[in-house]
Image (cartoon, rainbow, N blue to C red; front, side, top):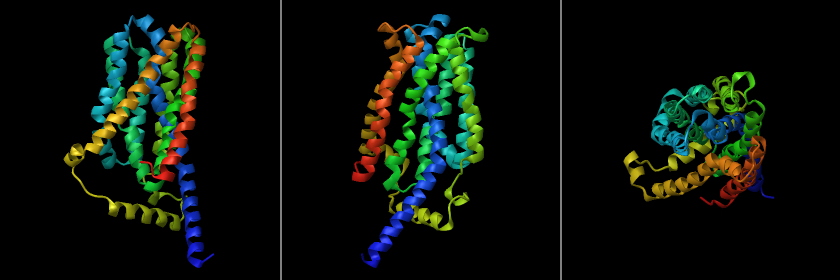
Length: 314
């Protein structure tokens, strides 16, 4: 083997080691945070049967409340990311988590459709900056050739929320119903919302803003990341916000993502109701059955991310 090939092999191993260290340091916390984000977003699908009966909500009221989340999510995503640049990822993400944890927990006190609408809209405002903010954060740690698999690893929290959240929500609804003077759906919002406030404080303490500030990377490893990311920055073309809006490729991606989210969220918000309608009466059984499609999604998401990076399938 030539000296050049040996040097290339050594460099590749060093880059892989740095990548592994960064991933193990960042991803577990980010994964748990996004799991709770998606769980707090979709758990009204499990609460629907009990909550609608107790509060006399029609399917129209429920559907509007579920949808208001995404109206706010669409409106406040860009402003929230602009705030992230000003405040810093660690502080802004922690702030968003504390606020949405409080709002999600507060769902246990709703008594009217108006309260339902307001809390769902505000929850969308609070969560709007989290996922895109994390993508910006990851772009500052990983070069482009690794981002598909890293994003897939982070986004696997979506199907994992279904795998874990379905059985968990079903068990809470069934076993905590009327315990301590609260209905099962109220306990569900409390148990699944309150931990997010604590997670936000953990993020504030432990999530680093930049690889430049951490002590668990060696100077040579920081230099690797610095060189890779600065090279990519130099190759980027600069465009205006108006230029982005005029780009047909952007709108094609918007259309694709719209179609994906339409299917995913229809499944999330209505699948427990459909399973109930098929004759499954126990909430615990509904939760277990609802986890099946999400389990398949976990495997395929990781596979697609790896394939995208390996074959440059963008």
